[in-house]
Structures are given as structure tokens and as C-alpha cells.
Image 1 (tube, rainbow, N blue to C red):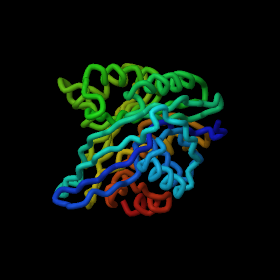
Image 2: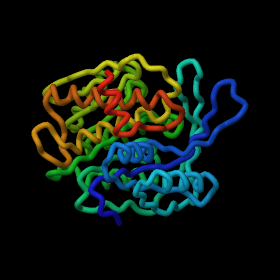
Image 3: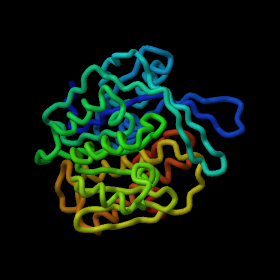
Image 4: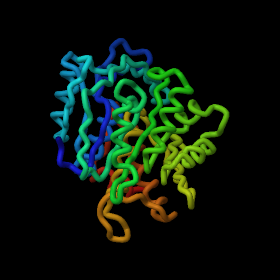
Length: 312
């Protein structure tokens, strides 16, 4: 069990990064929830990652990498004994990555302490059964409780769940159990191809989250709440690759939820006013942009973020 009030639940995996025209494939430990936890740790917040990996060669790589980060990790045994492996194809022209997966997400249990203040999840962990149901239950345990915030990053992977209707149903169930939901324009275009991403984001908000954040790559991001919509454009960036950029963005969003807040309050709280949301989006966009300037999932430190924010 963990006594840390901030918890990330989800997969740790190995990305096999294959660049166009390259002869070699490079294994890099990753996984969206693991990346978010590492990024949040680098931004100075105590956080525990509840995750699972197998006793196999990819799992050994994950274990070594997580040990180096200094992150507090609660490893739950995997029923299958397997570690998820993702093949990431990187386009040299744009730095964007397309993925294929050998997925396993089957932790034997997901322990959530009652004093958890912030719970983040998403990606494979909310769609891959048998344990997506466990993750949803963990979200429901905290959702709606005073001083608690449940946040999710959809990070949709059609290669893992190609059934659009099933994936959409899982996302809607998650949205009803979350306070904050982040999604990319690519996520929403795949889930609701008949709607523009901004329309889909508003529809997602109607399922119950108090805040929906839409990321738009080089065009920045938009935040939607019941009372307002604000946007922030991204500055031009020399992109190496986009691996982990959305996770770095999410870590900055979680940082904003944790405070300290402009009104002086501490603890998990959702920003609401237009000016506060604009400030939050600006920091998130800068954080995500910095992550694209280096290969693999390498989120910025707090000092790097402060320097970049001043320069902007």
C-alpha cells in the first residue's frame, strides 16, 4: 500500500522505436501512465505509480528505468507474467509516431488508499480487460468526494482496441467517473468521426467531467468547462519526435490541479476561471512542446519549464 496522496495507475511498457530509414530498433521504457508519473515527479510533486510488468526481458528494462528515476513505484504482480511492448514508427519528416502493441494489462489488484487526493489514469489501462474494470472501480471510489480529483488522459490506441463502439463506451464510462479528461484531436476524431474534435470535446463534457482539455499538436490546446472555453496556441518548435509529449502536457495539467493555487489554497482543485485556465493551458503547452525537442519520453524538469515559460 502507498501513503502518497497522489497516485497514477496504469501500464509501464517498452517502446520499440523504429525511425523511417533506420536499420536498428531502439527499446525505450515508457507507457503513458508511467511517463506521466515520471514527469509529475520531475515537476516536484510526490507521486506513486501503481503499475505492473512481467518477469521477462522487457520487464527488466522497465524495472531498471523506473529505479533510475527515483519515482515511488508500487508494482502489482501481472497475472500473465508479460510486459506490454509497443512498436513506435517515427516519421522523420514530422516526428509523429504511429503505434502497434503486444498488450498485457492484468494486475492482480489495484490498491487505492482512502486518503488519495489525486488519481490519474488512462491509455491502455482503461480499455484493456480484464483490468480496465478495476481501474474504473478505483476512479469511482474517489469521484465526487470532497478534496479528491480524478483525472484521465484518453490516449486512444486503435491498435489495442480496434472496436470503435467498444472503445467509445469505455471512454464514456470513464468520463462519468472523472473530474478532468484530456484528449487529443486525433483521439476524438477516431472516437467520433462524424463530429469535429471541438464538438466531440463539448459532448464529452456533457458526460460529467468538470473540465475537458483538447490538445491539438502544433496548434496548441483548448480547455472546456461548463462556464467557459479558453485556448492557447503553441509556439513553433523544432520537433525531434512526439513520443511522451502528451504525457508531459498531462503532468503540467496535474501540477495545476495540485496547486498552490492563485487564491492561496493547497491540495487538489480544478481551475475554473478564464484567466486561471489560460495560465494553466500556457504551462501545459510549453511543457508538451519541450518534450518534443528530445528523443523519446523525456519530460522537462521544473527548472527547464520555468526557463522556457520566461523565454516565451
